[in-house]
Image (cartoon, rainbow, N blue to C red; front, side):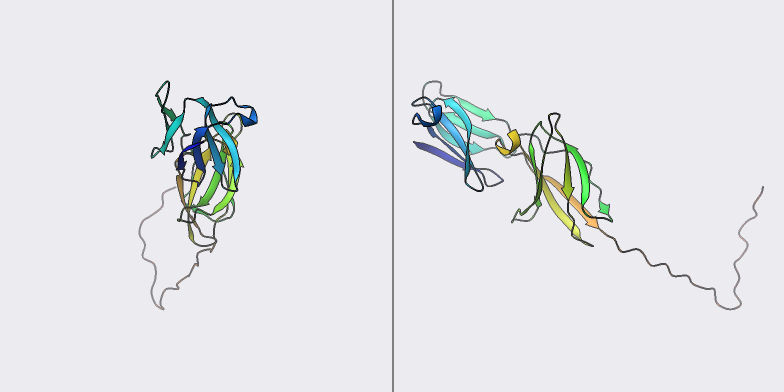
Length: 193
């Protein structure tokens, strides 16, 4: 029994409703499921009292409203954006950048443009540490976004952490100019030893 739908910043669809007793859940148990891109469906929350409304806060938190019994407004907290040092310039590609987020989160690196094309993913360990491989377009500036999704990708998504890195592997040219004939360097000081 479908009640409400909300779509997060990654395109995942969250659906609230009442379970029908299949899949091991009791009859009339309110649930929220997550349909990930690629049509994979996972249970996000259960044992709710007729969840009717879903909405996302600007930071990625999911707000759910129960219509019956307890009549609660429930806030499911999204992880904080990943934290990592980002160089402004690089002369190699790909870069391997270490960072921190919530434990066992899936890290998704994508283009920062409206297409949000995924470039690579990584998994944080039990301490929240991760290393993400950052492919850069040679000799140009790359605008990228990094998102942490809790529970190995089955939870909520963080706000995007913006990365702007300029790749430059063209060495500078050094031009030596000879002084014109008859010109000499002037003495500008004496060295004392």
